[in-house]
Length: 445
Image (cartoon, rainbow, N blue to C red):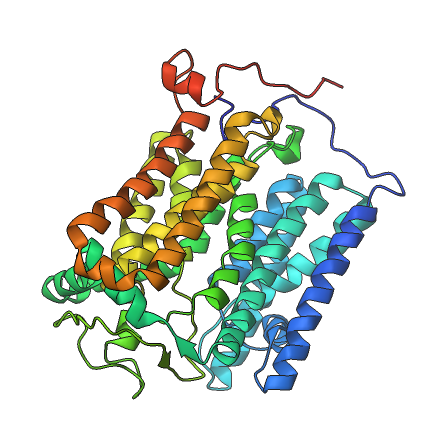
């Protein structure tokens, strides 16, 4: 297998960009600025802060997240030499220490992250000045990680504006086919108590940090001359974050804790989750507030956690253990906290593997197996969403029929993905998945 952690392993000198080689980075930066500017205009029109004030707070105010700025800086440092890393880290730590002292002296809450963002901006300027292609590439990844969270926050607010009604009654009724796992796991968490809740909550919110840890392992050595791998986790992570939120508009859902539980702020159907499972065969669209994001269908946390799991498979035992732990705990948290229905998780699995299939092992090109997998995954995703919306009543009424059908659809995508990218060479499964066909490799330079 062309492993996730392998890629092209030839050693080269640190590349210096020719005068015109930075053009595409400039184009990319322009696209990002236009996108963020568009979100900011939408925010101004509809009266919410938007990404620009959040970015400004990361520099001179109180960062919304303390982990993401430092994670972004850590990712940016993989492409620069040791001396530059020391200077960047020293600057970031010094600025954050000064910020902490000033905040505490003024009676403000503890926060860090300004130093990491300022150091990252300085590192960007330094790598461009040096025309260090490896450094520029890693800085772009770190910056995109931070900016993606800003864009995501704005997009979630937009979903509440353009979709005032939600489809939770349809999703919940369809979820009867899977035995309403959110109600089951939510009940278990109530029994397990606050310790289990705290552990799962920490894992849930630190998903980006886990992704950065795996990405740093995958990109180890690029600063010392090893070529960048042809595919790595950050690419999948960002693509899921780009494509996934589109479905929030197509299938707006707020989740059981809000639509059927105590967090609905008066818009809930009833205070039923996780004690009483509703069964209403006359589902309707529910009007909901302008604060709760319509961010359930599909479960992007499931998609991201599954991508961690997939990308950790070719690593050492501790990386594989971490990927497995994050996947299991994330699935438990999404259900147990009432953030998602089971049907959301199924859609998240299909979305992840379909998008991963478009990126993985690029040396293969778009062979028959890849085209078949991406086309089939897309068809399954469409089938699931249409079924949740228009077959919710029969799905809830005949769970013994539709439950296995949903799992078979998801399992078939998993099986095709395994055959296409993981099956042992020489087996019939690998042959069917196109893994016995010689892979085109890039020529040595």
